[in-house]
Image (cartoon, rainbow, N blue to C red; front, side, top):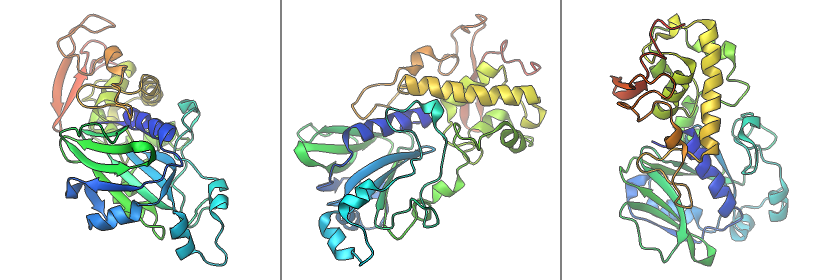
Length: 334
């Protein structure tokens, strides 16, 4: 499943190629991919003629701000409404860094709301969740359709944004201007802070881990920290010397501080490598991620530990795999 680094890689790629591009039309090949509105024709009609202002990321969700077309602006304009050029000049509050920014410098801020100064009620949103196998690919419209293509959005110059999803769990939403994204994409309401944000502090993390549950399960809980999945939970636990079955309540303060630091370190390293490709993940340009080749434990069960040469083991926890080194991550290790 694409996790934070993969989704961030896609976000940056989308901002490189789609900004200010107008959606000229589209085609939905699998109706259930569209989560809102429930009518596929309404979804396509709402998107047609809108231009992409900026792509954001929140956890594993992608959200594009959509500027109305000139025709839509004329219909909806009130005496106090600003012009299209003024809309483009408005300051936006990004969820993540601009494509050229260093990710470690990012501080999370929430999506604009009617109560925030950057909220612009004439902008709608396009939301995407890739789920297990989703891909967003920027391709020529003449490219043969991939077998699992679910949605196509057409742009000028013969280009299209193609949503490919083998397992069909991915979803797309159109959020009308009168709604906040969280009102329509309800999964956003459940997300904890971003790993790179000030909110993800040692005191916060410590407070959230005061429970009798395995630390691996806690790291996969998106209400504690957003964006971490199986790959980077295993990697951060290895670097922290923490066994995945260690109960949260048994972690020492030094272990919690070390784990928080290594969560950030691992995510930064994977973003730099443009994510991990073990099965289906590809960037917008169709390129595989490079982090997998340098992974410490994930996907390496049966291989020797890069640190101590002990054989990497795998176990099942709450229906998920956990990879670890039994020496470097002993349950008794403090």
